[in-house]
Length: 244
Image 1 (cartoon, rainbow, N blue to C red):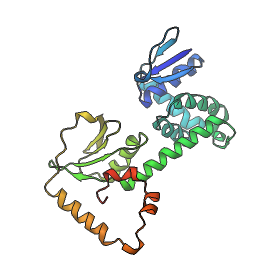
Image 2: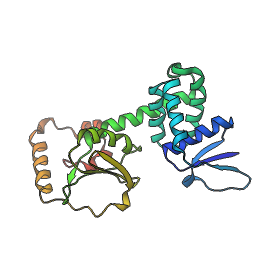
Image 3: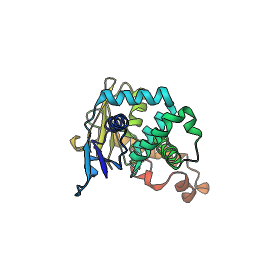
Image 4: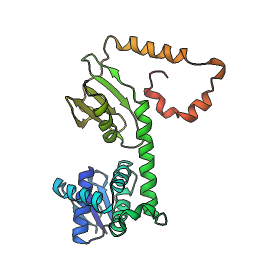
């Protein structure tokens, strides 16, 4: 049994892909270091993240397969599903042979899994583009907490960095305790535990009340259907919706 261990980052994972492809070795498992529990008689290879190697793999995927395939493996990686790294490894082994036609290969189980996971992550990202709610803190910073099923924080941050350019803001994934801080055209990801205590600004409560009143005002009482509403917008999204 050969275990390839990496730091959990996408660059770290692409470094694993580079090393395994170059050595022509087939890993039995590809795991984050934090998820591995050491056992006897197992061969372990700890891979240090190498940006140059990761960039070469990313470029090769985009040029020799397709940009769509690159997006599919990145989104499926963000799903954090158990075993997804090995699925991506074998997907790429096949994709470098098939090229762009890999997207039409529905007969392969791993290809189907990668495409299915990519769609699920993409759907959740799309939902949070409309469901994420920013609150104003005392410092004038906009703060948006949420608890997504998948690790969509990186692909949400790119969107808001291009849409809310003139404000400082924080998006906080409370289920994973990661946060993105944006200021002056740049964003960085930090440990959510490093964030200071959240204290809302003086006007925040006032604006929340206005939003609730607006929501109530546009509601047609005799057409209210909470079950249907929950069907379109599951209750797992309600915790951080101001109007709920």
